[in-house]
Image (cartoon, rainbow, N blue to C red; front, side, top):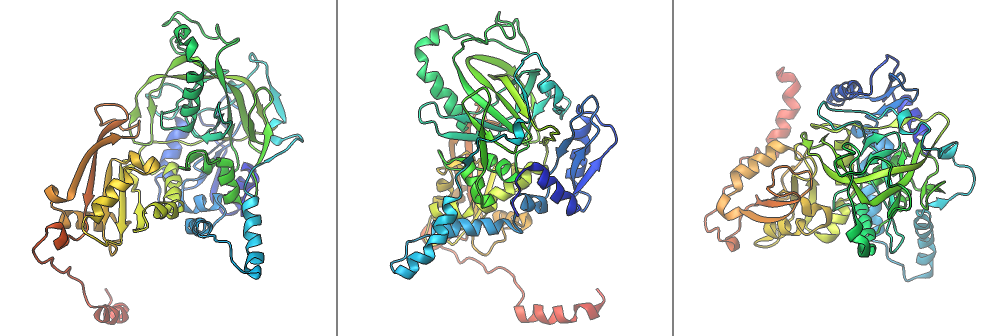
Length: 515
């Protein structure tokens, strides 16, 4: 089933015994994060979504770890298995208009389904706008129990925001998920990397205004005197881009904001595909953007093209703190919310956390698209320890000499996978989700001189090992069995395997053996 909003998802989690309501008073500073970190690392029935109903100094409850297991991630997407969505994508990619009249008539329901994907703009009162706050002196961010998750974090961070921007030239919408460090009651950091859609919108807007670049100045929220400009002095008549942030949307849209969609593919359309019904949007109150009508909380405002602030450090999904640096500033012009909002958030750190399950959903759902680019790929594994961008493991149907290295280079030329640091390619008989088997094959089959590929290229901004930010060394490992056409003139030995009839015979006697 799909969910209209977050609260229906919460009800379903509770019905499935996947949620625990916590009534003991807890603090938003470090304490909720420590509790959640312990729960998320329990690989058993005690790993639950958590609803903290008594957060010290706040009236708003906190929902966390709602995506923190494969079962809950499947529930969020309304399926029993991620493969159900992958199969729907495969079916869509193979759509061909039939030649016969009967075939064309049978094709109409599929066209009707596709037509239901785009979002629907509503003009009536939206749940996310039951309460509207436009006075900057009123309580805005101060009423949200924004978490500080790790001791050395630069402050409290909104960690599960859906950030809405539009291309200043084309008007095409982008929804991304970028952390927002709270600076004041009505300002946050705007942490976007140059690979992100919002960063492209920001840069296009700056380029459009480049004639005024000599007048650009930089100021800091955390250090207001550092550049001689104080907080709030320059927020009138600025060069700026509108930004909206939705917190606590329906789970399919939350996932869509994290998905590695091709450029200019609207995340609301993808969410509509996942939900099998359109996402409802409503116009913001103070800026020219549309936001999910059924969200819990909406932040409206602008990013000033001339303003940067010191942001971070932040305990990141890599298991290390990402370093502090200058980033743009998001300043609120309004905050709207439901009368009884729930603050949906997450923590990231050493895996497993709930972002691991978001990543696993992406791994399975987007495999059909990877196969369009490289049809010989049979499966993919983004292992937990690789934190999504450090390691990609693939198995292929090898067809010709050098095929493994072709796949390695193909990965480094494919969308967000181009940021992968290590790529390992194995034969079709390997279970690439068993890391012991992967290690056995790599250690056994690889000649380091012959079978490794080294290059330099773009890396994830959070990679701390590279000498320069966002660019560094990459390594590919071709662990497939080598052919004579690849210069291997010896006989490749057969792997030791028991015959299947003996295995079946022992299986039939196993219980009687008392072992």
